[in-house]
Structure formats: C-alpha cells, structure tokens
Length: 355
Image (cartoon, rainbow, N blue to C red):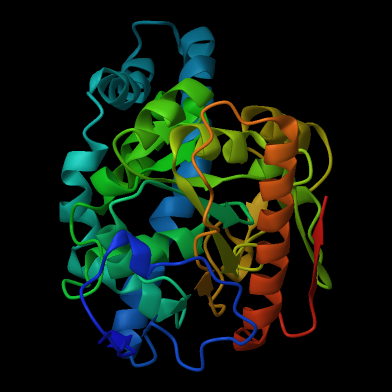
C-alpha cells in the first residue's frame, strides 16, 4: 500500500500557484512511502530490481562472448549463431520502451521494488502541482550512482499512483535523458528503455522542452567515483548548460536528491574500467551489492524533490544570467540535501560537496 500525505487546497491550480520557494524546514511526513510489506513482496521486489543491475553485466559480457566465439569457433558455428541471435534481434527491434513501459512498470513483481527498499518520497512540489502549471521542467537528479534505483522507485511510485502521480504514461510525459550508448547497446536498450530514455545531447533536450519535461542526471557517471561513506559529491560547478537551456526555452528547473544511489551498490573506482565508464557515461566498471553480487543491497532509499527555482524566460541569456541561476540551483540543492538527509539512516552524518 502506498501512503500519501494530504495537501490542503485553497483554490484551483494555476501556473501562479506554484511559486518558487526556499523552504527552511523539511516536510514532516513523506508524500509517498512503502513501509508495509510481506517477505514474499520483498523477495519479489529484490528479484525484479536485480534485473536492472544484472543487465549492466550480462549485456557487455554477452557481446564479448559473441565476438570471441567468432574467432574461436567460426562465424557459422552453432555456438556463434546462438550467441549472436539475441543481440541481432535486440539491435533490429525498434525503440518500443515507451509503449511497453506501463506493462512492465505496472506489473506486480516490479511494483514490489519500492517495498524491498522501504522507499520514501518527499515532494515539496508534488506531481499533480507540476503537471497543473503547464510548464516544462528540467528535473535535475543527483547523484548518479552505478544505477539509479531511487529513480526506478520514483518512476514506479508515480506510474502506479492514479490519484496523485503521472500515471502509466510517465515515460512519455517525463523521459530520462541518458548517454546515447544506452539507445543502441543491444539488450541494455530494451531493458532500460522502459523508462523512456532520450539522448542527452543539447539539440534533443531543447526539442524536448518544447513539448514537455525530462529528468537529467547532471553530474553523470563522474559522481560515482568521488563519493565516500562520509561525503557525497556531485559534479555541478562546471555543468551550466542545463541552466542556459532552461532559460532559453522558458522552462524551469527542479532540484532532486536521491538518497541511496551511492549506497545500494559499490563500484571499483579506479583502473581502466573506471576510466571507460567516465568516458561512455555508462557503468562498465566492476560493481557489487548484496551477497557480493551485482544485485542491490537492502538499503533505505529516499527521494527528495525541492520546488522549482522560478527561472525567467531569457531568449539570449548572458553569462551573468546563467551564473546567477546556476548559483541559486547549487544553493537549493545543498539546502535540499541538508533538509532531508536525516530521513535516511545512511546519510544522517554525511555532508555534500559540489565540485
């Protein structure tokens, strides 16, 4: 069962009803939470969640095995054909992630994923409020982690909340911007495509803001290699393109912090695989979690969303305009982290650094 907090309304929602605000006090109750579950539901949630992290291992290993088989057994051998068949089918399949998203993310096993993590959300601006403004938003998500299980839980919770969420068409309404390789890598594109992945290049994102919103992991994979048990690190100081894009488009920016993305899986943070991960924007480094396997640990996950910053529409923003609103975003993110880190036991004593 999803628990929601009630929100008092004093009149019809309008674009003016969602004024920017810098809250000084955290919400005392989660917007949505999954505190009650059975052992069977948690087991199902664990198995369903494991698919998303295992595909990061299975896809590249399968491709490597297929390439090796060509040289070891020949192009027409049975083993080579069996290895290449699913890769070719995946490569030839059209991008159907958005259309099958409701089938996958609203299925019973996947709906148990938030229960496995005892997932909670704190929305200072709710899904319903954001929809009602009619604006487009860049939803800035931090940090990336090996794989964003907090983001997965957020998508599942919103899609399956008919009353206050985005509903089954979330992947079309608010897709996730990601490295272009995820759109073409066999197997990976089919599993992760259920979240409505779009390329994270500037032209694609600018076109997207003319139609609606998107989620952007601003710091990218680099954040994975700088966080520690005592300190979270987000790469934001030199990342100002999203602010310029929002100003030029007349969109707004919403800060989100994902507590648990760096604790649910651990990764090898040095060596050639780590360097390759940084360049590709996709985790191809060694990582592990529960049972020392590439599956998620049973840790608490928490999603905290602040209010929109209230960016103006500036067709040709100056560097001073960009710097001004970027500084406001950094400050809003730091405040958001401090307000909600106490809701997650793994973060109570952590600090946040912006690099």
